[in-house]
View 1 (cartoon, rainbow, N blue to C red):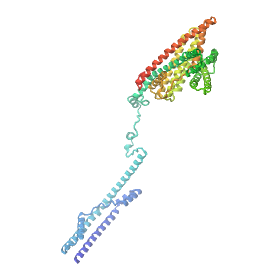
View 2: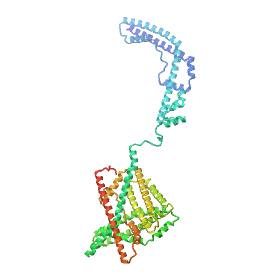
View 3: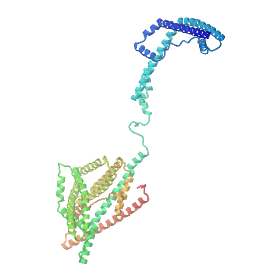
Length: 593
């Protein structure tokens, strides 16, 4: 046991002495490496901030100078000695041999360490200098990489790309512009190259126009061909519907009134009239009162007043009268609907409410009479203004047409219109065209009464000029209205279908708009104009013969108007029936009008 304990003590003493020798060698190595002039020069040449950053990093990480490996032989012997000490519970003889071997190995280890450390001391300065220099370069490289990454993150956050000028070659401006992704189109400084590129690069108008598609082509052909045809067809049908209503007022209404009076005289018994008979009687009273007032109007006086106007031009007067004509047309339609409603109530009321409905009918009758008289005078003044422009020899008609038509285009084309508004606008154009026809009839009558010399050719030319200008303006207006408001030509076919159903007294779907036209005011103007023409053709005979000629001319006129009414009415019904059936067969209206 004593030998074992002494052997263990001796082995531990030897190991402690070997460790002390190694510590002493390490301390001499550190002092020698720190005393090298190259290391001092390297540390002095470094900036202060870099030294601070290096010291901070050294505090955080393990030192980089511990790269010199120990002797593998001594390491293995020390490990074997340690293992012998740990597992030393053997026999005494084995212990003595084990201690002797440990002492020998310790002596060899100390000697090898002395020799190795002497060589390290000689070459340690150079190794330490290389190690420190390598560490400094690695640290500076890591700092540059971290700064570059931080700049790249900040540039990506700002949404821009920063191009780093690393070498002198990257200072080339063309190379930088070529590599920059934001620089897509390089600017050519040579005028000849720029001109050649413009000549051989795409369309010559590519900077201001774009390539169209099939939809754009369809839109162009709709504006030029399809829509004008359908629009003109709709306006023409509307014109004939207005003309048919006008002829009904002059032919059907008097006939129905005569039949009612004949029945009353034949039965000699008063029967409450129906709503239709009350409506005919109310329209006849309004027409008779308006014609009576217009007969007392001096047309020549109004003509000279308008012609001698120096402050206001003729086209201004005509435009003002046209605006009032449209207002009276709209208001007259509402008044006439109110009058017909009162007639319906009076025809179906009880005996207790008879007094109320009679006063209501009379008040509506008076209002309709006042509105019709005002409208008639406006139309008469407008017809006289047009006649003044036609008769004048200073191109007043051309100025009137230009100002009126282009003012109409300006006031309608560049505005936003819905489909219903365009529907109403088409009907208004049909009514306006009928009014122009009445005005031209007034001009014809005035020329028959007062013109001298050859006048028919001049009148025919002026009438065609007015009609053609009106037709062209309506086509241009509706074509561009449909273009700007994205209205397809099929919409005008739908409008025509609604008008045909109105002609056939069919109910339109979804409460579509109907053509509202009140022919009372135009009829008053036409009667006022044609009466002097018939009076001038009556022979100068005694009163009985004069009355005979008046009745004969009236009958002839009535037959002519009734025949014309039958022809137009039957033609409208045939066309309406054919078109409605056609639309019903083709539900999507995919037909070519």
